[in-house]
Length: 114
Image (cartoon, rainbow, N blue to C red; front, side, top):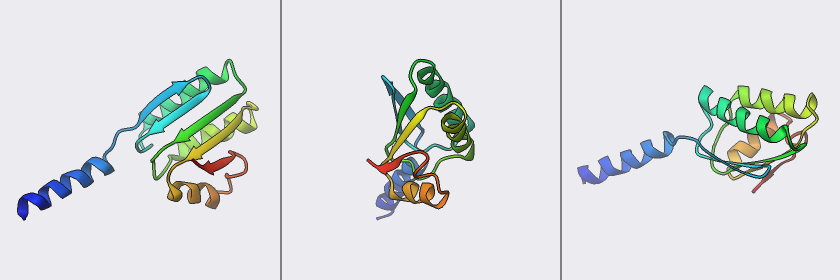
């Protein structure tokens, strides 16, 4: 029983502490894991900047993150409003979708459940 509880706690830690993984294919950026650190922001920004240099549309697929940092939100806002990039975001988590709704960014970022 104690061993079972330790295994369960370790599984929960792995879920909570899951590092972000980012993959790029064409103008689609797919993010797996939680978006939570400055280095996550830098990786997202660097990859999207590289795409935006050649394309005026970017699709961001956030598969399972439950949150997004304010620095990423600010960057995406600038990308759409100042740089004129057509951004669409697909989220896998309903809580993240509701966060975009609460911030009134669903229309601007073309957010939908994916």
